Length: 238
Image (cartoon, rainbow, N blue to C red):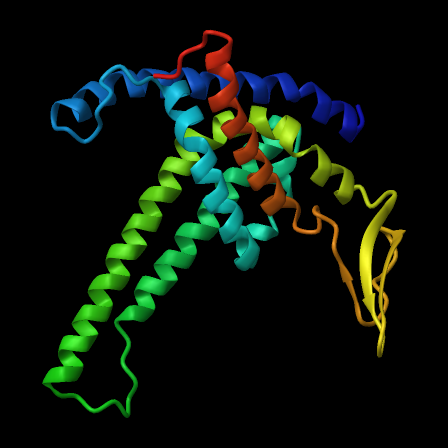
């Protein structure tokens, strides 16, 4: 049995795993939401998992998309666009691992002080302030990462099957891409085969040149449309 056949046979296994996770998440929301409503952390005591995802997924995916534009550790996770569920699952855990490892390294660096730094009361207060803020922000990012990994990525897979199509086509390195080429006094818009190297002084202006980031933003757009379209069909989001 070749690798491609073996991989295809594992697709149903990945789908079953994702469906099991969705069922567990739905159950967890059924336990947590009423408790959060009692203490006024949320206003909607009957909010279910799928409604929460549709309402909040757009903002979360947009934030991840923006992060992906500036953080190479996220941009490199091309398997996050895969239609193979097991590759997608593996990629989500690898990305979460990159995030938590980076946060741990940052927190570890917070405690260091330059050897030539002059220690005084002002500097001590400044260091305590810096360390506190860094730890608080790192904790918030870590919580965001856990929520994203456990509750957003399982449902994201099914949206990415649609929103990830442009990026997957780009990653096949087939066809052409639009570029802008700068001369001494000229600016030229043209296309070139994706597989070719960019000419000097040229910029790739394809919307899919950052595949993961654009997919996250397209996923946000799909979820925003769902927020507007579903109520027109009598499907309430609560």
